[in-house]
Every structure is written in C-alpha cells, then in structure tokens.
Length: 271
Image (cartoon, rainbow, N blue to C red; front, side, top):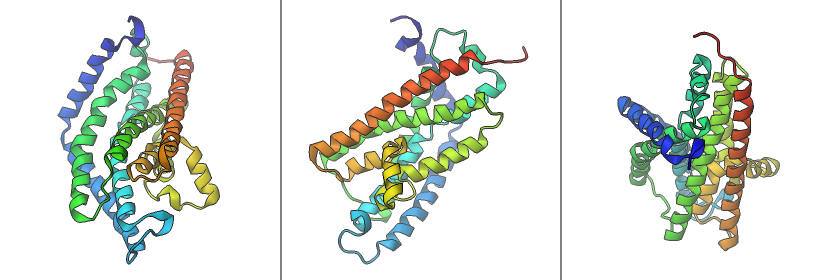
C-alpha cells in the first residue's frame, strides 16, 4: 500500500515516541504516585459509603465490586493519558505542524502511532503496579475468563476513543491561543461522565441517561461493566461493545474531517 495509509511509514514515529519515553522515565514514578493517591481517596471514600453492607448496596455494587470498579477506572485513566492533546496543541503553537503537511503521511495516524508506546508503557509500568498495590490493600472482585477477555477487547476500543477525544482537544489550538482551559474542562467532563469519579449506575435519572449516551462512558464504564459481569447475557455484552464501536467509528471520522478542515486554513508565520 502506498501513500498516507502505508503502515510501515508510521513505524519511525512509534519508535520516536518510545525513545522520548525512555528519556523521561521519572515521569512514570510521578504518574504512579499521583494515580495511587487519587485512587486511594476515591476508593476509601466509597468504601466508607458501603461499610457494613454484606450484600449489594446502591447501584447493585458490593463493597468489593465498587472498589474494583473505582480502582480499575483509575488504571484506565492512566492508560488514556496519552499526552496527545498537549503535544498537538504545542505543535500548532510552534508551527511545527506545518512540516507534516508536506509529508506523505496522515497527521492523525502519526499522532496515533506515536502514542501507542505511551499507552503500553502507562499500562505496564503504572497501571499494573497500581492494580497490584490495591489488590494487596483491599479486596477486589476477580473476573471470569470470559469477562476478562471482553474487558481487554473493550479496553482497546476505549483507548482509541480516548485518543480521538485528546486529538480533538489538541486541535482546539487551531481556533484558540491557549488550550489549557479547554484541556482542564475536558479532563473534568471525561472523569465525571466516564465513571472515574462516581460509578454511572449511581447517577440520578436524567444525568444517568445523558452519561449513557455520551462517548465518555465507553472509556471506563463500558469496559468495567464487562469486567464485573454487569450485563445481561450475550445481548448485553454486544450492546456495550456496539456502543463503543459506534463511537469509535464516529470519532475517527470526525477527527479526519476536522483535520482536513483545519489543515486547509492553517497559517504559519515565520521561517
């Protein structure tokens, strides 16, 4: 295959992303400590809510179930922290993004290739130790093999959705001179509507309906629904994956369309 869709053309960008990670290895320690502290506050707060409960409590969660939900939600948040929004905005500000316009590659695919090592490293070097730490400190719910397999597939969809959300956030740099506020708003909205702060099953009626329709649910609550077996048979699992697949396709197409529109109006001053 020739042109911007040739897979081999993106290997150097993935390699470059890995080399950049190795230069800043202390970042993983900082990320791990920050994630562990945030998870501890959330987990022990909700464990206090469910204290003394011997069966399913609010939302149908057991104490171990809600703990597992919140811990894994924090792990997914770490996996989704691919830095694409920061890097795209910075390249727009500096004008470096203009170089990509003369290369026979797709810029969104370049950013995706470069973030793959970040996703893998965050999962292995931060996510797994974080999960292991909390498995020692508090009781967690062990998934069945089928639920674990569904969770892995669902997590792959969630990573692509997170990439698209971050890419769209970074592309806000085309229309505003400062994306810090945009990134902070995005972070808060995603954390709430993905279920990282409050399990979506505990949200009141209208808010729950809105959360279930938005793409952010597919980033955390969807995979966790499958991991904990909180779905009704094969149809329930297909519905969760179908929701993710629909938003994955939709956001990929939206990113491609907006990139073409943004690239057409890009102006870079200087030499």
